[in-house]
Structure formats: C-alpha cells, structure tokens
Image (cartoon, rainbow, N blue to C red; front, side):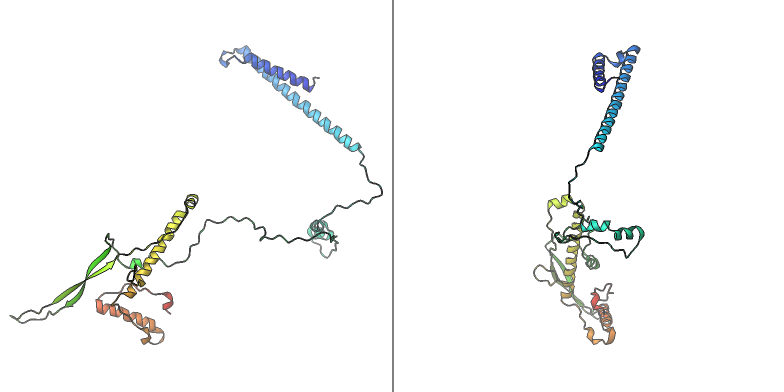
Length: 306
C-alpha cells in the first residue's frame, strides 16, 4: 500500500502533466478519444484525493489513540504528607451547590439547613446597580409636543386680506343723520347727513425662528417637518394673542379688548349663579340693538365660566 507522501507526489505529477498536455487544446478541438482520456485522468485524480483523505483520517485516529494510551499510563505525582486543598468558591457558588438550595429547586423542600463557609479575608465591594451600569434602552421616534391652544381657533373667526402696503387705510362712517320724514305737497324735504373718518392701521410683522444645525436636519429626516409645524403653531398663537389683547403700542396690534368704543359690562350687577350668563346675555343684546347684527362667536377663558 502506498504511503500518504507517495500518493501526494503521484497526485501532483498527474495534475501538472494533465495541465501541460491539455493547456493548448481548445474544447472544440478535442475528439472522442481526447475527452475520454480527460475524464479518466480527472477520475484518477479524484480517487487519489479520496485515498489521501482516508489515509490522513486513519493516521489522525491512530495518533489520538496513542496519545490517549500514553495519558492513561502516566502517573501523576502527588505531594507527601500534605492535606488536599479544597477549591475556593464564592458565596454565590457555595449557595448554588448547597444542599438546601438544590433540595428547594429540585423537590420544593424547605427547612433544610446548609452551612456556607465565609472567609473574613474577603472584602465586600460596593454593590453594582443600574445607576452604576444603566441598561441600554432604544428611544422611540415619538415626540410628545407641549399642549397648546388651537392656533387657528381665533384667527378663523375674523376675515383676513392680503396687502403689499405698510399701512392699511379705510373709511369709517362716523355720522349717520336720518331726517327723512313724511312731507306735505309743495314742502321741502328734510336734509340727511353722512360723514366719514379715515382710519389707518399699521401693518405689523409677527414671527420667530428656531436655530438648528445643518447636521441635525441632514441626519434626522423627520425633524424639518416637525419643526416647521411647531413654528407655524407658535406664530399663529402669537397672532391670536395680538388679535385679542394687543396693546397697540410699539410694534403691537390693537387688540379687540383695547379697541376704543367697545362695550363693557360688569356682571356683578347680576345675582346668584347666573352672573356670567346674565353678562353674556346683555352683551349679545347690546350688539343686536346698537349694530343690528347677530353675534356669531363667543371668546371666553374656561375658568371664567364658573
């Protein structure tokens, strides 16, 4: 029987010879005899590869048997006149190996006593908790916004227009004298009067901004839409405040509450729990009889209702 070395040399020679012989031969130039020779050589090389593998497997198993045999025959040296040292275990390891713990885990038995050996030379260290090693937590994509008033609630009640002027001028009819009456034949008609006053409202700018880095906008795809939405909400809330309570000084609008000539009522003139309802009823009535219009909205803070 050939040795592994001899089979490896034969395989190497067969490979090199086959490559040299068929190196310059194209597949289309090979006849039936050449193809048969090519197949025979490949089969021979495959047989040699399998034989080498089996021989190496046999040699490895033989070497393992010899090594195990030598280990079994070896005599371990033991010290003379010394006590066997018990392997040191931690308190946790002693607990896991204790009779009481294993009886409870396996059989559910209680009231079994076990002794754990403690060496006072061991030093207790500070207990490690989550505050010292916090566990990893993946943050959700959810952003919980601050609760705010509906920013469109008040602006939607008022008609708006666009302008490219720095001021808005309009005429207000401030005199309406109606002397019309029944007139006898041949008599002169009574004279009526209408007068106007020019009013001017300054155009004001209301806005704000949020400083954001380019890196944040590039790294977080949804942050731009969220910030745009919150900026619009902030501006609309500021517009609502100006419409209701703008002082008119500086760059402020003149809000409804600070407009001269508006009606005001003191609900203290009504008694009992209907004070605020009576005040609202009086305000509605005054609008109806003074301007001949029907009120279509009530703006009220929730805490003012009770």
